[in-house]
Image 1 (tube, helix red, strand yellow):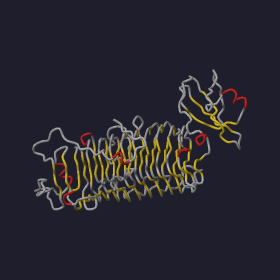
Image 2 (cartoon, rainbow, N blue to C red; image 1 turned 180 degrees about the horizontal axis):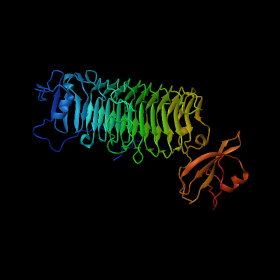
Image 3 (spheres, rainbow, N blue to C red; image 1 turned 180 degrees about the vertical axis):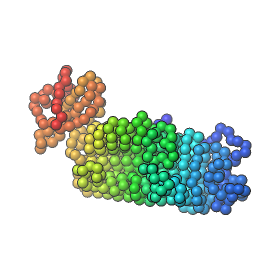
Image 4 (cartoon, rainbow, N blue to C red; image 1 turned 60 degrees about the vertical axis):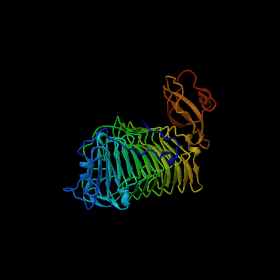
Length: 462
């Protein structure tokens, strides 16, 4: 089941932690195993008085669905999880992320969670640091919960597996209903990533795994800062036929990263649809605070929502030559357009451009944002999207292309905005056209409810 959180506060999402209980446990395997720096893998039994020395040993001994309690201390290891397990700091000994540390120095990854057998795994209350690549990597495991973690200094060396192009503190690929909340993610190569899985998986430390979308995952209430080579939050599709769909980033604070929050289709014929960027704070990043991006031919980036965010003090996008000043939110379609986005209710300050659009038809809600006086150009370019935020994305099917006047594009240049719909009634593009009284009389206007007369009136694109 997909989760949708339209315009919800972060406080409304506090009840998502799940507990996985096994249907049966082997009698020889404990349901709870303890780990301590003073424990032993050879003589330990996993009891409080005879703990194991490593988390990996406890994971191999505890029953599927069981709990591993980690006492305060430092554990120099990398952990691989293929069965459902709950790993928590020992609260009875005041264990938490400040004193319960998984040090993955010299290892490719801190923790790898892989496969359907690990569905429902939970990890909470640890520091995960110094992995050459990912701090936590989750592949094809659903309902995984990562919370109250300090994830730091991962993905800075890229030594163990130099083929990994996307080093993240936390990366989930091919997952559904994951929940990443209340973590501190600082000073890594990259922040938090969601991606589909398949032939192309630039984050994989192992074979790519089973093709699957990234569906209905939630990234909420995290602090993400100082990640030097990768963006703060990235929700990106790489595999045709899969996609990143209906994921939610809500209530996060993202700063001092290349870009704040990115929703993108990165390779040809991929999909980023229905993702929601809600009530985050994106500030002082080295690219725009929020980016919606279609990068390659055949991409579909559509129906994504950017609502209620606070955005300030970010930088321009160098891929857009005209974007020469600090930019809060940008939607850019390189080959295919970014369509039907909702960008509304955001508070934007300390930027040259508030919202910057490049090939982004059907963008709604732009006049519903709050632009501080420090924002020199609230909306760029000053086009139909500014004047007609409620231009319908669909009309009744007409079985041929239809054109409507949407109003003035620029009085100074004597141009009007023309909305083009395909035969199925879908909005394709809005573009400027030199004013013509003859054409105006012939085709009518969306604004006053008149429509194209019978037949197909062709208007050349300006």
